[in-house]
Image (cartoon, rainbow, N blue to C red; front, side, top):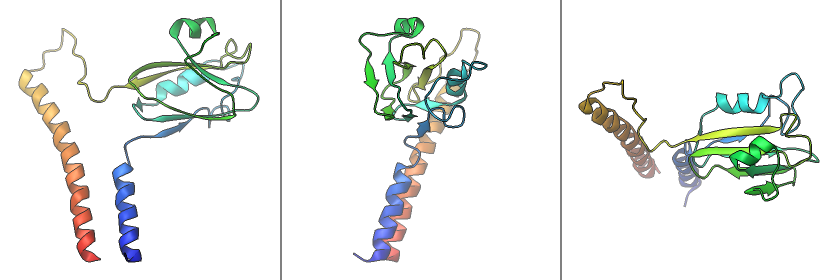
Length: 173
């Protein structure tokens, strides 16, 4: 296999992977990682989480020193403690994959840190399901079907474009 072929295949593989998931650095620009937030802004992590759109298979990257990160239940989040967290890490460099839609509750495992604001709720979107309609919406059923078809067509066109790119590149080699 020529070096041009190898380069093309690598670019193609990167194009296929692009857009499938995102890695988010928790607290990167806010507090320089996962740590106790400033006293003047104890909601900094939840504000950050609300500004981002998380989807299934995205990754949260926590960097910290002499601390920990725990995934807990809603009641444990409210109490700022857990004796049996759903997930626990204290290695200073933790990546956590958001593997399902819904709410994820994170707290620090160090005594007193959660109470001072080192906690965060992440909402993961279910991009496969259509948006819920309230009773006062009067969208026509045909419009809903058109919206679904447009999203499906866009996805198919994206992959068709990648396949065509691959075929053209293959014959150029």
